[in-house]
Image 1 (cartoon, rainbow, N blue to C red):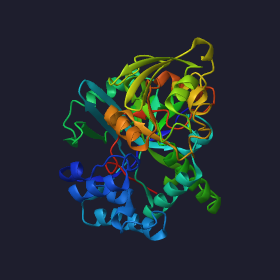
Image 2 (image 1 turned 180 degrees about the vertical axis):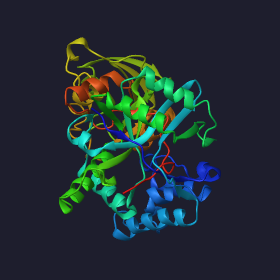
Image 3 (image 1 turned 30 degrees about the vertical axis):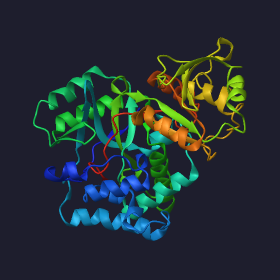
Length: 411
């Protein structure tokens, strides 16, 4: 059963929360991160993307860059912009935009639950990205980015959080993207006990986003356990910073693709090859937003096409029947020669939040093709994780995004 613990977070003063809170480090290019920091000098991006504090061209993986991250984090603490709670708490974290509202619990989850597959993954990790997060955590002596977890909806837990949400929040601000963030610190011992018991009844929790951060935290814990064979299991390194949401409140948007060329084919040859597995309908200048599974948009040479997978290429396998897998196995690999999308420099992944114009501009600039997809469903993610399989890279894009810098776990 899941072990989900309260902890004393390092977090912003209420008046500084909006300025410090930042989108996750990996949704920005370096150029975008630099501009964001120029607009918001207190932005936590300075810690999460420490290379932005150095001249362009500086190796982002050099020791001095990671050392800068630690220096900047603890400077925020020294100046009082960040403060550490004196007692262990849970934190309720609500994100809302438009009609969408999701409410999670910020807590520390167990490394052993990860190792024992109580916390279940659906995505492979890349060694270089793991190493980056390991160095960042070690330089900061803290976990600065929460792991995004999903759990089975629990009506009793939901009622408990709703009652607490009737009180005045510790933080209440709206980001420039229109997302409102509200936070309540849960100090009451009886409420803490009920929350802990609710999670203790759950036999599985799912990593929605943050696989590399989770894997990095686990490897650091394993290393420290080797150095401290007498560890008790209560040390802070045995846990990692998480936000846990009921899966029925989560929203996944599409994760689109752009390929830089047509693999040496002209347009006629390319469309003929695509037609072997897909029904192809020309749609002209109007973007194709897939309305159901098995339907894809294709943009090439300033024209949109609607692609529908033929029935014989569908599968009952939880991974092979994902739209991202169908596109990879029936088009990207056989037609465009992209065998390993994790490493092939010809392919780019574009979150659906960036819109169709981004797809068109990239495809036109590169002289290649763009593909719009139907979003992966949360139940598809769960089926893959429950069968101990892994999704292809860049299968899910969760919105709205959690903010970094609101909660920090010192280890």
